[in-house]
Amino acid sequence: MKLGFKEKAAYGIGAVGKDMVYMLSASYILYYYQDIMGVSAWVMGIILLIARVFDAFNDPLMGAIVAGTKTKWGKFRPWLFIGTLTNAIVLFFMFAAPPALNGKGMIAYAAIFYILWGITYTMMDIPYWSMVPAFTESGKEREAMSALGRTCAGVGSAIITIVTILAVNALGSMAAGKNQNVVTVNLKEATVYAVELDETLAPTGNVKEITGGFEIAITADKSEFDSETSFNQSNSEYTLTFTNGSDQADIAGETELTKDNTSLDIAFNPENESGVVAVYLSKAQYEALNENLVAMLTLSSTKEVDRLGFKYFSLIVAVMFFVFILITCIFIKEKSTVDVKSAKIGDMFKALLQNDQAMAMVVTIVLVNSAIYITSNLLIYFFKYDLGGSSWQGNYTLFNTFGGGMQILAMCVIFPILRKFFTTIRIFYISIFSAVGGYVILLIMALTGVDSVYPFLVPGFFIFAAVGVLNVLVTIFLANTVDYGEIKNNRRDESVIFSMQTFVVKLASGIAALVAAVSLSVFSISSSDATYEAVEGSLIQGLKQYISDIMANGATVVSGSSVVGLRFVMTVLPVVVLVIGFLVFKSKYILTDEKLEEISAQIKERRAAES
Picture 1 (cartoon, rainbow, N blue to C red):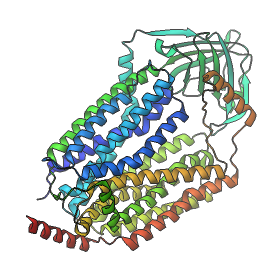
Picture 2 (picture 1 turned 180 degrees about the vertical axis):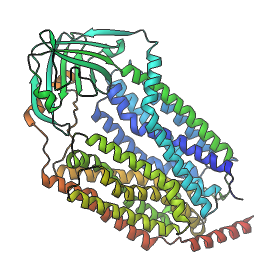
Picture 3 (picture 1 turned 180 degrees about the horizontal axis):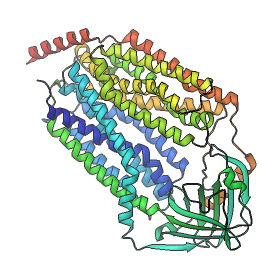
Picture 4 (picture 1 turned 30 degrees about the vertical axis):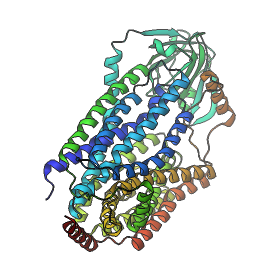
C-alpha cells in the first residue's frame, strides 16, 4: 500500500521538530554557557569533546538496543516516543541553568545535561531514520521519504537559525521586565586600554592606556554581582563617549561608540569596584583618540534577558518538538519489520560486518563527509585571512547563508528533478563530480586573486548543491542495505546500520577537525578574535594578561605562503578524499535499481513462505 499524504506529512513534521532541537543545541550551547553563564571556553571545549567520545560508543549500542525491541507498537516508535520526551525535558533544563550555581557547580551542570542531551537525542534520532525501511517499500517511495525527511530537517534548522535571537530577546525582555532585582554599580577604579584593530579586526599590537579619567555605570541583575564578572559586546548594550574638558570628542567621525561600531571587554570585581576595561577600535578611531580624554561608559547587561530568553525559548521548542514527534508516532505504522530472533550486541555488530554493502556505505560516508567538513572548518580562515577586508564577517555569513539555501533547494528540488532522468547511483556520480568541479573553480579563483565574495557563489553552488543531494542519497543507500542484509544475513538491522550513519558523521567531523588543526599549525594561521580566560581564577588578571600579550606579540601576520597552503588544503585535499570515496563506492556498491527489485521480490517470497 502506498503512503498517503497523512503519513508523509507526519514523518516530515517530525524531522522539522527534531532538527529544531539539534540546531538549537549545536548553535547556541557554547554561547549560552560561555557568554551568559560564565563557563570558560576551554572547559566547554573539554565537555563537548567528552560528549563526542561518549557518543562514539553510545550510538551503535543504542542501535543494537532498538533492533532488539519487540512491542505491539513496533520496535521504533516506543524509543522514538521515549527519546523525544526525555530529550525535550533535558533540553529545557540544559538551557535553564540556575544562576546561583558557583563556577564548579555550573561546569558540572553543563557537563551532565549536555551529555544527557546527547544520550537522549541518540535514543530518538536512530529510530527516526531507522524506521524508513520499516514503513516504505524499496524504490522511489523510500527515496521520496528520505528526501522529504532531509528537506524537512533543513527547514527545522533554518527556523532556529532565523528566529532564535529575535525570540530570545523578545521573551527575555518580557520576563526580565518583571524582575525587580536590577541595580547599578559604579566602577571607581579601572585600568582602561584602547586596542587598535586592523581591517580584519585582529589586534595590531598598538595599545593606549586612557589616563584622563574613566566613568562607568553598569546596570545588571543583582545575581550578576555575586562574584567577579565580565561583560562584552555580545552580552550588553552600551554607549561610550569621550570628552576633552567640557567638549565631547569626535572619534573619527563618531561622537558615540556602541556595539555597532566598536567592541569591548570588561572584567571587574564588584566588592571593591575595581577592574579592567579594553575598548577595541578601528585604525581611524584609534589614531583620533587622545590618551588624556575622559571616557564615559553607560552599560546595561543583557545577560539576564538572554538567560531568561533561552530558558523560555527552549521550553517552547521542547514542547513543539514533543508534539511534532507525537504526530509522527501516531500516524506512521511500521509495515515491513520482520519478526526475527533477538541477538546479543556482539551478534548485531557481527551482522553489520557481514553486510558488505553497509560497510561500503560507511566507508564512503566517512570519506565524503570528511572532505566536506575539512572545507567547512577552514572556510572562516579563508574569508578572514585570504579574502580578508573589513567586511569579511558579512561575506562569510553571506556565503554560508547561500550555501544553506542551496542545500535545501538541492534536497527539495534538484534531487527530484535528477531522479526523473537518472538512477540514484548515477546521481551520486554527478554529485561527486559537481563537488570536485566546484573545488577546482574555487582554487582557480583563489589563486588568481578574486577578492569579491559574489564570484565565489559560483563554486559554492556546485559544492553545496552536491552536499544537499548527497545527504539524501546516503540515507537512501543505507536503507537499501537493510533489505540486502535481510537476504544475506536473514535479519533486518535497520537500527545498527543507521546508528553507524550517526557515528561515522561524528567520526568524519573529528577527522576533519584534526586535519584543520594540523593545517593551521603547519601554516601558522590562527584566529585572533578578542578572547581571554581567567588567570588563577581571576578574570581581571586574565584580561590584563591578554592585553599584555597583544602588546608583546603585535599583529597576527599571515604570510603569502601560508595563505597558499590554506587554499590547497581546503580544496585539493577534499578533492583527493572525494575521489577515493568515489572509487570505494564504485568498486563496492552493487545495489542497482535492478538488483533492488530482485531483492524486494525475494523478500516478498520469503515472507509469504513464513506466513
